[in-house]
Image 1 (spheres, protein in one colour):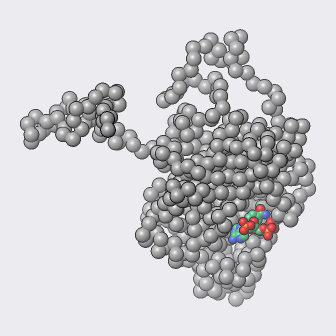
Image 2: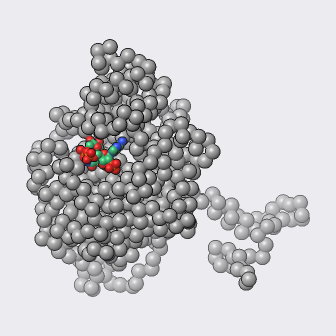
Image 3: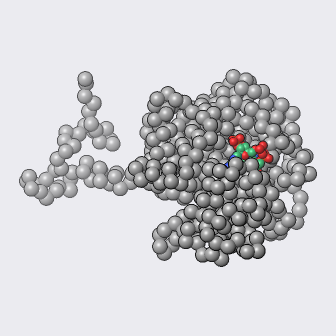
Length: 484
Ligand code: NDP
């Protein structure tokens, strides 16, 4: 086999990569050993800042295939024909753990898909839960602080988590899911994904519908008990990465059925649940799931750093036919995700191979550190210009969205029912599932002062008295919410 010549980053052949240049065999080193210095300096720069949240991730490439016609709702090209295929990248992640954290932990899982469409990238940056802990992004950094480490002890704090949740009743729905079986999936293949937020669809007649996205696992839902997870973590911190990578190497390609729920635009004004509140779902009997297609993962990335660590997903990447909604959390994420990548990866992060759209990109952005492409010489480097530069097209205008109201800071919990939907979820669990919910909740409350536990029991009680009773018993405290 012909050997490949080792070179410097400048392409110069290297004669020796094992022995530093020294004065005599005992040293000292010589300063002119530029390749020794280059290797050490490069090593110092091998890491980039990890994501503040969703730092630990696993990803794979795949294909999305349309199986049902939904063109009456959206003109998005990727849905234009039954049978149409679109290449994708799906990155899964835990939320709170750092890059080296164990996989088999109770946590929400990120479920972020990049669809490389003919009309640019569509990033569906969701989770494995249909709701979220907070509905106002003003509270988001505080919430994340409670999931991270205590500033003095450098330990995760159950007290901080339950203090915040018990003072933020809108979190109850997501907390219930997190403490249920769904909060600790057996593998990344055995869980659903959700867009969580409400988005919009725009059809060819420029009519708007509100839409929710669901990815239902075709592997079936499977979970781990806390005890099973502890045994796994003791032996393997990378269990979910290992499972996903191995399944794809064995050609056991995981699949998800992609479905949508559709709400005509004007129904949002009268629907009994606030459709832009990310702590709420749309019950299926009101808005049934409509199948759209199947997503299959079938290829592992070649290089974890280049293709997974450097992958950048942002809900700001949408295509014509898909739009945003007035969901406040979504609006904040549209800004903050792209901003996180500018900081983490740099100004030109969307030109990195994994992020680069497969369709043409024509912008007037100029320069900045690490520009990876070489734009052709042109006089059209500003807009408007007379030299044939790219121009916008009004055909991509969305229909106007009616907004009204006085500018103020409105109490988002005022008159908002935080309890019925978590109660409905609790009531659809079997007695066994409820029992595990109680035990998981009690385990997560370990070391939390009783006053905080009692404050949280009031929320459980309002969702369903049996919920509070079960948790109180599992924790081993009186259920003051029930007057004990
Ligand atoms: P349905 O009976 O029509 O749907 C219940 C849904 O709950 C199913 O999608 C099921 O997912 C899911 N589910 C079951 N167990 C859990 C769990 N432990 N954690 C999270 N999801 C679970 O009832 P509704 O549509 O009226 O919803 C009732 C409650 O179900 C809601 O209040 C909400 O908490 C929860 N839910 C609703 C969703 C929705 O979009 N309507 C989506 C997910 C949850 P699967 O079919 O995959 O097993």
